Image 1 (cartoon, rainbow, N blue to C red):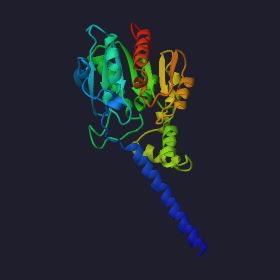
Image 2: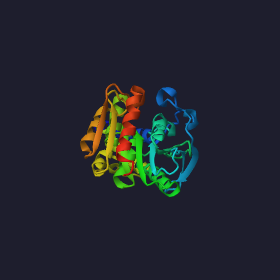
Image 3: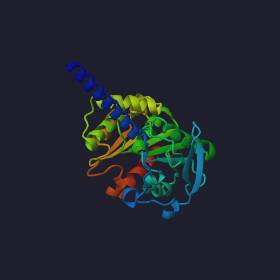
Length: 301
């Protein structure tokens, strides 16, 4: 009788363990469709809302997805320097528009892309940068082949920052990178969120969540950890921006990334800054520091 009870309990616990891991892997893979708000991203309309001239463009990723984007040319049509704006996990191309006007006015072409998202097709999943890397690479191809870009910088936010960081480590076409609110390790930040939101400890659940996530997303967990790659970017420069009040990706992720990066590098410890909302914290410093960084490292590189 006792053996049967133990066996039954073991089976129930096993079912609970695997079903919970499956559920949480689904939560990672599923991308919510959230709308832009002025509080979150400031500018929710097309670039013309800010008086920025633009083209609605699109291009294909290597796996055949159509990536929509806004191309905002510099006033000087001969400009060969361009900056790609890469949004975070549940956002869209409006996320980077807070910085677009300042960058365009500084003499750069700007490309704000929409990474793969269920807005484009309901079957699209989130892979925490693994497949999203293809979208950033497609943006580089577009700028190089269609717009004649010779010097390309990138500015990414949250997952977009992590994605851009990994691409930059592998693609020398990116000459300078700015990363706002990036995570150092994908499973670390997911475990931290699971604990904060659901009160779940990392062990024993998260290792199985990671296995289900990798299997269902057709990805390699080791390939979505920016901390592993950021040191490979040098001698190209990186600028890491992170708020101390970030509750989505804790401030220590920014510290870890800066420590792992090699020179040239710079860090903005934004006191009381929330997740990717450093423009709202101090828009003058945010814009000036971004433009100064690109002017120093991207022009005539």
